[in-house]
Length: 155
Image (cartoon, rainbow, N blue to C red):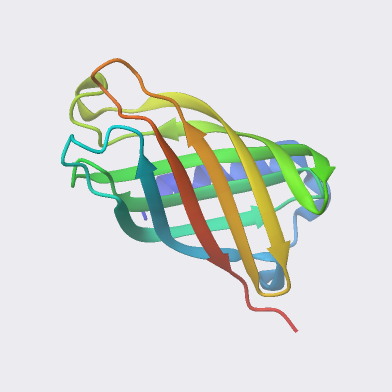
């Protein structure tokens, strides 16, 4: 991951929750990318999207995130953003993840673009799962339900 993306996450963290100026590694989630179940199954898209991502909870509602992965078009993508999940239903956190992505050849010539996606998160101990709905964007991005398994080291 480029340092500039992580610097952006740290900046978001400071703006949202100055109380977390001290970094606690036991709060840090690590993921190995995404699995995307695409709505258009006949487009030859890659469902397995391996990569490396980080997510850091700032409080019970906000988390900062950044990472890099191989996207559904088999190109390298980076992302940076924040989760806002103010609701909980049956132990599942609900809200949105907002941020920016790049690397999609048909979307904005592979450059950075903003996105706001509905997301649900289940976390228990060392393991967690983020599930996001990615809507289609004409012929630039194909829609999918995206699954992100995450792990954290904690006592």
